[in-house]
Length: 237
Image (cartoon, rainbow, N blue to C red):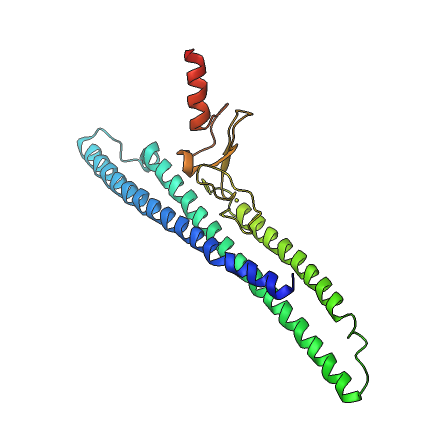
C-alpha cells in the first residue's frame, strides 16, 4: 500500500472518531451543567439556613464553624472531575488531528525532495541515481512514516489519557487508531479515572468512573453491575 493510500485510509476514519469524541464531550457538558445547577441551588439553600441559624443563635457567627455540607462539597469535586474529563477529551481530539497534519506535512516534504532531485538530474543531463530505487525507497519511507504515525498517535492517546488523571472516566479512548483497545460499558478507549472489576472473569474489566456512577475510588473489592448481579444470583442458589 502506498503512503497516499495509507494516509487516505487513515484520514477516512478521522471524522467518525472525532464525532464520537465530540458526542461524549456534549454528554459530559450536559452532566456538568446539571451538577453545577444542583450544587448552586444546594449552596444557596445552605447559606440561607446558616443565616437563619446565626440570627436565631443556634449557630455561632464564627467562620471556622461554618461550612457547606459534605453533599455540596462532593458535588463540587465531581464537577471538577467532569471538567477534567472534558479537557482530556479535547486534548485527545487536538492531538489526533495534529498527528494527521504532521503525517501529511512529512509526505509533502518527501515529495518536494524527490521533485527537486528529479529537476537537478534533468538539468545536469545525468540519470537520477535513485531512479531505480524510487519505488522501493518510497515504499520503505512510507512504512517508516506509517510507523512514526502510529507512534505519534499512541503517544498522543497516552498523554491525553494520563492528563489530569482525576476524570471519572473517561484513556478520552475512543479509538485514537482503529487498533486502540476499548473498555467500559460505553465501549470507548481509556481516559480519566477508571476502576477495575474484581471478578477475574469479567468480560470488560475496566470502567470509567462516570459510566458506573462512581465519584471516588471504591474501598475494598468492587464489582461491575453485571458481575455484581451474577454474584448475587450465585449466592441465591
